[in-house]
Image (cartoon, rainbow, N blue to C red):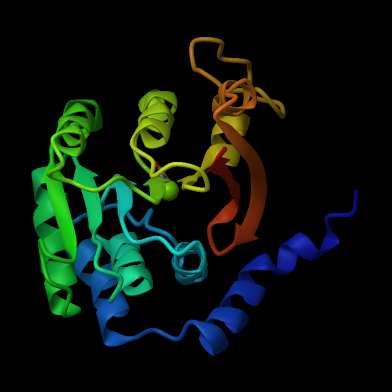
Amino acid sequence: MSTKNIVHAEAVAQYTESRLVPDTPAFAHAYTNSTAHGIPEIALSPAQGKFTSILASISGAKNVLELGTLGGYSALWFAQAIKGRGGKVTSIEINKQRRDVAIENLEYAGVKVPEEVEILLGAGLDVLPRLAEEIDQGKRERFDFTFIDADWDNQAAYFDWGVKLSNGKGSVIYVDNVVRQLLEIGTVGSAEKDSTVQDLVEIVAKDDRVEATVMQTCGSKDMDGFLLARTK
Ligand code: DHB
Ligand code: MG
């Protein structure tokens, strides 16, 4: 396999983002204000943000579930995707400071919190069962699109919750950073195999509730990739 074009990935990202995803004050502020508050620069890139937003839009999603709000950059893209559909983005964040900065960033962008984006403070595995109860009680709608971008240790559990809280056949589950994780735990590549960490790809492959694929990505954020699943 030739990899000669990979050296140009960063330049391609810069060129294409400058043409197709130019910074708006709202998105630029989400990055700069997050960095100013010491939040790590691990949000989606502009191209990835727009990609996930287009994906949510064309999937017809009304309600989006997000695991890992960080500074709210991705939530901002999802809010844009589902605007006017009568649903909302529900995002879970374990870190109070990040939650507060995300609210600042969303409000700066004119997004209504919590009407358009609701950020729930807590550990995913504590908050998700509460969401399930609220769904069962008819207080909350099921999720058409789940975006998982949180701690890797619980990815498989988050994925399972994503399927359980999904809105029936054709719901989407997107898991960020799956390729880098495969490389880091040595499932693929030269790192020593870490058998204490679950391989999400292996788990999803055996999950009859979904069909899934992994797309590798390359750009301003090194080589990585995401897992995209659809409930059957
Ligand atoms: C890291 C986490 C992410 O979700 C990401 O997209 C990039 C990097 C990290 O923890 O380093
Ligand atoms: Mg990520």
